Amino acid sequence: MRAFGFDTPHSLRTAVDRATENTRYLAGGTTLVDLMKLEVMAPERVLDINRLPLKGIRYDRDGLFLGALERMSDVAAHPLLRGSYRVISQALELSASPQLRNMASMGGNLLQRTRCGYFRDTTMPCNKREPGSGCPALDGENRGHAILGTSTSCAATHPSDVAVALVALDAQLQVYGPGGQRTTALQDFYHLPGDTPHLENRLRPRELITAITVPPLAKGTRSGYLKIRDRQSYEFALTSAAVALRIQGNTIHEARIAVGGVGTRPWRLAAVESALIGKPASEATYEAAAAQSTEDARPLAHNEFKVELLRRTLVRALITVGGAR
Image (cartoon, rainbow, N blue to C red; front, side, top):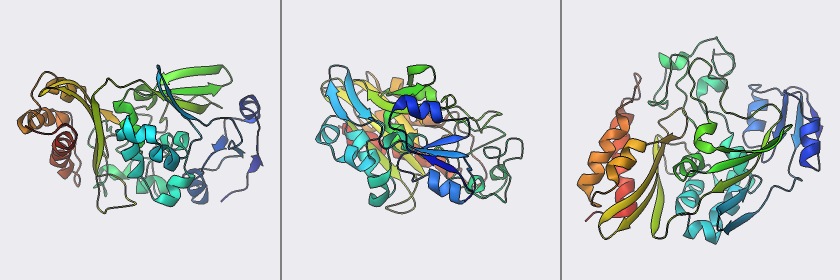
């Protein structure tokens, strides 16, 4: 780890004023510290933002509010989340380990970097780490890489579970920076890699996430998160699915679907949603809709299994949440 300056600002304005383009904000530190140890990231200054007033879990007519410094474990265990926003609670509980969830912040989780081994190995080229150096994953070991949203420059998957659930629910981020406060949809927050995979999100220099908001869910909405991985705990997704359904009688009236472990960002499946609405809640309906989830898939040499696995993951998640009559 390289030497760096350290400061603890007591207000948002002070934090932004003391930041530079090579400053990083420290919340739980569960990603930042690891990457600094590996010298994948080498900020000149680190600002500890844990004393800033960025906490709170509440619900009103506008929906759910989550402060960016709320810890993942506290959000997952909150009765409001376990009841009305079960998909978020389950996504959090299936993330990392209990120890990490006790430390990691909600805002930090949404900004975590990819777990691609080439990105984290500074002896290897990586377009995310060093633009223009190449992407060895395209022709190398790529079993865990993306099949949706890839480019000739990068195929790294987005690592966050809860981001998948939040994208499915049309969450928004409140962001603060030199220009003041602004709001952005989480679905639009993450960039596709294209030719610039080092540009991962739409945060501007010196900005930080202050809160996450989620619109109210219609009465009767049921939701859940399914994660498929190589082992039961402390492992990233091979495939995952965040599902929210509103069913009246046996007809699906509303569907929200996003998937993880397969995309270069949390992947919303609008075509699958459309294929479900107005149809009976049955296994045949789910299978027909899930078939559309991989129409744009571009598997690599070692991850073609994710195409079928994603379809099966979706069907199982839909049955679990919506039942099958």
